[in-house]
Image (cartoon, rainbow, N blue to C red):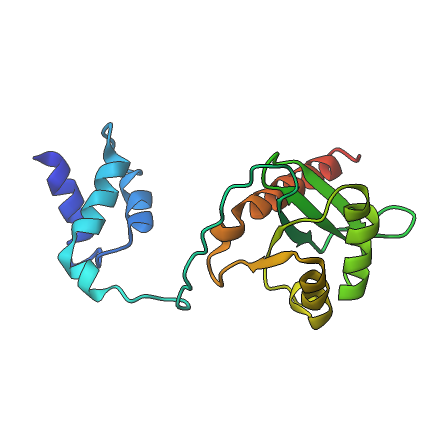
Amino acid sequence: MLINTILLEFHDNIYCGHLSEDRKTERIKTCAWWSSWRKDVIEYCHSCDRCQKANKATGKQFGLIIHIQEPSTPLEVVHMDWVTALPPGGDKSYNSCLFIVDRYSKTPIFLPFHKDETAMDTALLTWNRVISHTVLFKNIIIDRDPKFTSALWTNLHKLLGTKLLLSTAYHPQTDGLAERIVQTLEDMIIRFCAHGL
């Protein structure tokens, strides 16, 4: 069959060197097409015995993903993270943003911040601008930022009865809701800046 011949030539041929599926799709798309070509390329690469034996795991070892029970009420479980390296803005030249996302309603809260402020500043901002107007959170999903892992932050939440859930190293999907909010906010900022707003 012609498709198998094309896949064989673009993968197993001595001049092609068993390239990755990404590199192979880039090459094939310039000279051949059929309705399921991309799926066929991926399946062919994954079924290549030589590639599977020769591929080395790169990067760091993954931790285990923590299971997060879905909340039954608003602000029971929240995600907290930072958007940093923003251009200074506002009358106080804020250059970062602390955001809190309610896992139940998916509602984000954005709080302007200075990147060099401390864990104490973070705790005060969270208390003054959010918790004092709503409820104490039961669980906070956070990454391993030093402000969130500091003794002050962990002891404060121990006193308040809030459980801190650290996202697993090298598994950003644990904190996927927060990561998606960061991406959306950055896209919005870029679009507004592009239009001079």
